[in-house]
Length: 552
Image (cartoon, rainbow, N blue to C red; front, side, top):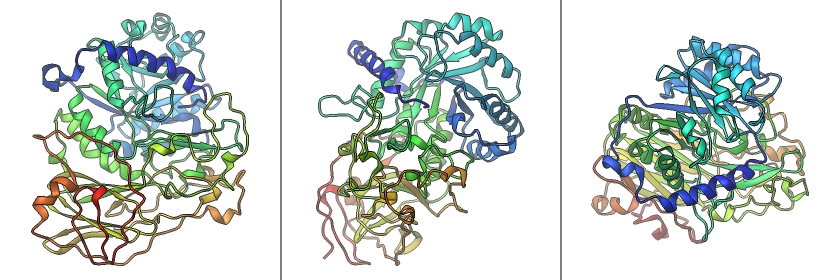
């Protein structure tokens, strides 16, 4: 999303959403038992072309294409503005997609295009790529999407395109223009307050609320449901587009995929593949791109584990299955967490403490707006081929959980120090690794960092690091020495796990395990300030993470 005035579009969007929800008698996915299966299902990933102007050939797109395709993603939604390099990058992307048996389509970003005057230019660009072998077609029509753009003249756009198009824009739910579209895309993939900020006690709109609003507004037309793992942005006064807020996502990545398997939508769009500025990327850091200042929170903060987590769900979605457990073929632990506890105070050195233009209303001093909605937690999802004990050591606190065959989600309190994750069966270690990233009370680059570090066990092969261009502005505007931009790496010794008689009795309360016969509801809890500091090798069964005990 290339915009600082997004909030201006979001407010009417969410007011429409609220009205739509109030008029709905039932959740649309409950019709026919929520088991509607379209003739074909697609998964897209939102790809920001505006930050890849430094790519010099189609081969610079190959890694993205291959990696996305291997995860089951059907097509990239190529978000384009009006940059001078847009056409050459589209040429490269289409060529790479064709070579790598991938599909792409254009998503016009109407924070750059003027929807009231650009329908002809948009139609012309659609026509240019319509006959490419890489162009996604759905129902024998050229697939086209947008980011916002409700004022677009759709009939003129179709005429100028000169080919049948499957038009799936990001128009507001309930829009009168839904009569002119083939489908609609919902961008808002995070809980919010109805005014493009984090939810509050008086205003809390879930992603599911957005699903309801869109699906009812579409009246049976196809829906592109969002799936997003995170949201955090922290641009200070050193850039012209200063903004600083979070949406609380925390454990929603696995939750959302479970929801999507029962939603009945024909399309899912991952938000995003490479939007580093908003911290919801699932693609590699090493993917060639320029730095708009986001390297202060993306440096040494890979997210590839989230793509690993999504893969079995994507397989299940394609198959129309309600459960992804049968697509688990090997033991994997995926984990994520912020690099610092909420109590850390970086006000003295953070770049957002300086005054900056705030015409967007999105700029706040210090900790990002909405930080109070987050928790000091470590989020863990395990893929298990058979039952086992998942172990987590966060700082000095040790936890053990019963995991069943399939997909299990756990949350433990964050402890400062190293983070260790393991899997044990029959008292024998199956997997165990220490995360490369410690939780610290250090202000990286002098700043707050509300991005997530994502890792997995076994760890992915090779390093995923920003290239020079992707870190070009790492130290721009910082108020500390540049050596304070270096991440703190993890070290830790081995810990043991045991199979106890209490396993079956405690597993129901210590984990969230999913199967095709049991649906789960999620709730978020705020952790206590208390922390359990334990001895290596000692374990206690934890019956719900808020009830953890001291291992002393």
